[in-house]
Length: 127
Image 1 (cartoon, rainbow, N blue to C red):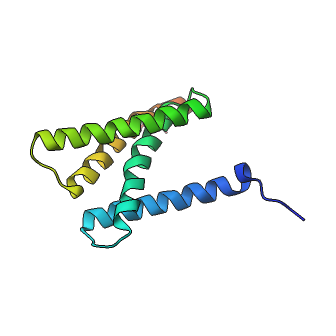
Image 2: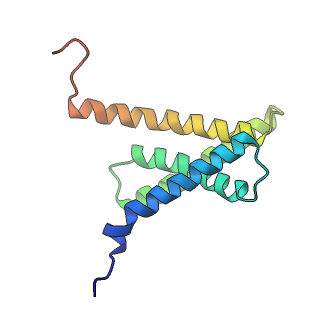
């Protein structure tokens, strides 16, 4: 009998499923759906999107420290977005999800560019 190893066999599958559920939550929140799944799925998006972006930027840390820092950073990003929206009297679920998505992309962009530069990708003028 063969046993599944959670670290090697199921990790990519679970990560993909979590990303799909988080994306569905963001889409449900942006569409203004009245579904019962909107809240939990949007909460998963609000935690996982900034956490994934921050974890990508912290590649030098060991996995436990990176996970802990990424989750803490995700909570901080969410709280800062909520505080800014409340201070400006612009509170909305759609706006919060959109703001967190934009901030997550802004956190992810330098890490992706740094990885591209490390690989030594050719510039537009080289053939």
